[in-house]
Image (cartoon, rainbow, N blue to C red):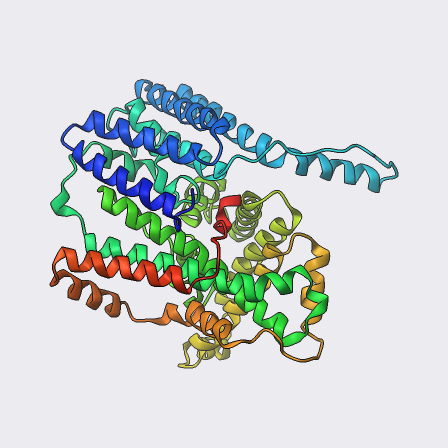
Length: 473
């Protein structure tokens, strides 16, 4: 069930009305939202609803056991067991074929010629996200960040809550579960803010992302040898804009829908292409994942507490595993390796003691030079992220040196590209001004404006709605 569809609109409006009608009865309210979340997931494939339920139940039971236990050794063993089970489930569904084929490839490299046909199990939608939520639940309880007694219904709903179930943002149990314990209050809902988020998300996905995908990115990455340098460069920039508009559009809709239901989700994107260095980029891009990797992987590895060399190793391990989390492919590992390398090089650059380098970094022009360099470094990574093979990625990069006629730079494509990239520089005061203006209008007028906006987006967008890119992760 995709967000920009009539099916989802009908589903969400029904859930919104019933959930608020049940708000005075917390048990019925949460039970209904849980049932609606399983219905939402089952709309894709009912066979995997039991998997979602069992992982949620397992994490909840481990969480309850951690709360009942004061012995540090026993608590640590419980956490290790819980995390191991969750990661094994993720590895089975997502990495079986990748690991076996990699091993067979190594076997063939040393002289053998395996001829086995291996395929991974069918990948459940959003499994990486709900496994990370299960781990977050156990981890936050282990660290005593969630002190309220955990109820199994709350654990099940935290993992399965439908606005974030398929593609995030990754919620922290210590931030979301306490919200389940509070009484819903319709007067506290920022309806206008939610409307703007939903409308912005639909615009990014349906018009910007889908137009760039169908008219620029897909043609070039399907057959890069058929295009020349400018088209290929536009397609690389186009994918940078596409993946940002696609994923931030999804999270805008998710945050807006959760807000209307009375729940707060964290911000997941903050104009990432305005970043001047890799560290800042990861503070702005997929914030919930980067902070999750920092808190649950980088810091437990030792972070920056064990010397410079170990810090660099920890950064590389974190980003390599972050790349592998996105998909069972060596191109994703390459993407993660590039991100780790960028972080290491940036730390080395910051540590340069040269007065000339320090003057350069303090100059008025340097932030813009740094933004330009950072954006193109990110785009290089996106080539490997988008290409299914190293051969295709190499062809894309090779075609940057070719010459020929520009064929794909039609004005709708260029306009969507400009809006997708430079729209991130729009001042926040614009959004606040629109929200303030909406607050002075009757609710009915705002509702009509939202309906007209949705209709216009549907009218202007390409035919059909492609799945969100992060659904595959």
